[in-house]
Image (cartoon, rainbow, N blue to C red; front, side, top):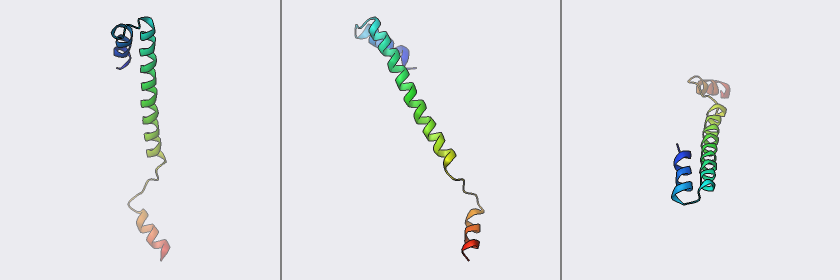
Length: 65
């Protein structure tokens, strides 16, 4: 969603012509990779976080007594 407007802004809005189009394309790829990396880390934290069940606190109390 960002690549085409960035390409148009760089190529035609800033007057960079073909360099602006390539810059906009690279900018779009960079933003996409950052967003995917952020989402991957968020999902990874959810997976690695220990799952706490309803019975877990009761088991911990039985072991300590």
